[in-house]
Image 1: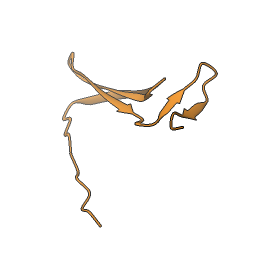
Image 2 (image 1 turned 45 degrees about the horizontal axis):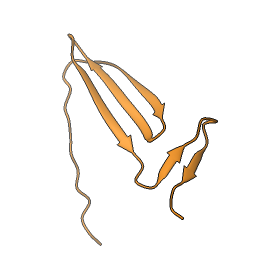
Image 3 (image 1 turned 30 degrees about the vertical axis):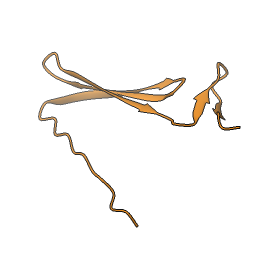
Image 4 (image 1 turned 90 degrees about the vertical axis):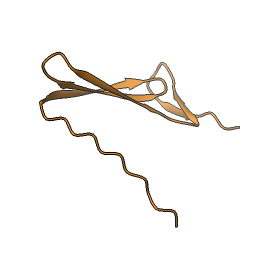
Length: 60
């Protein structure tokens, strides 16, 4: 089994975070003051979210 790669980000002035649902997955927005915002875009490689909010497989 292949070893899992881990990336760690340390935010010393973390304030708050939000998770936004998108058609491609989720955006995680982290506010780390003052005036610093980190956005992590989590994209599905083979899925999409329809207008009704349901997730669908895009493969075949």
